Image 1 (spheres, one colour):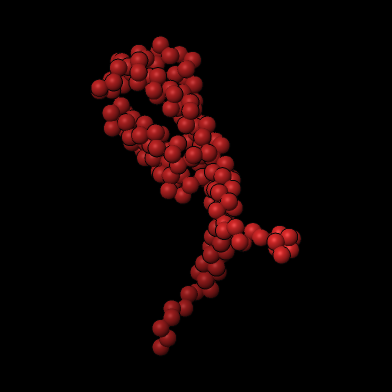
Image 2 (tube, one colour):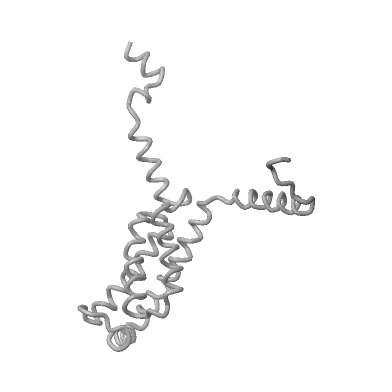
Length: 172
């Protein structure tokens, strides 16, 4: 008897098609997915910040009457939330200081799910997961962070490796 299990031809055919489709899907660059995540999360927070900006008095009332954050006055909480929601997405969009920009957004997500809307845990879990993906994997190659990193890599190479034959002939 053989140790390998022989699959019926129809099952083997389906499996081979599944493997081929999975291989095609794996060709999608992670950087493209990360770009989509950065833009999506950026707009979630940026739109919330715009709402606070356009109706700041109403936002203060929400913080005072509905959100009721401990230890922080509603006026300061509303201004702080608006600033983070308008500022950090710009870094996500550009892919600049991206990992750093995810930290205040993760903090806001944790505050929302623990103190403000615990029933929104599914949405908060999604936001947190996307932000953690960006934090742990970085923004990808479609970002200013990538360009900055490449610039620093070029400048950190030893000088001896950058010597060209023309420079050597001048030194001789």
